[in-house]
Image (cartoon, rainbow, N blue to C red; front, side, top):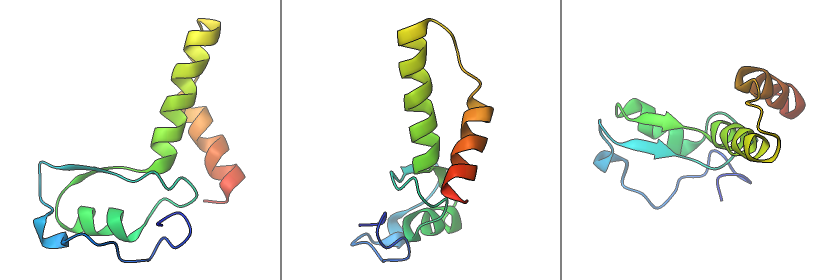
Length: 84
């Protein structure tokens, strides 16, 4: 839902969000969704979809090649590709 409509309110009571919760959103085509904004406003740590995608891809490359890729470069490339 948040991938197609990043500003769409989800059926979550934002008042229940607070530190030390970690909130992960799998929408990788935007860095901010309703969920990540609400979580940030309530002091939660956030992992966005692009973070998840980069880490998943890096781990797969490490398993396949034995080489640890430059995650910062991967994230920059992803942001550039997605226009973020």
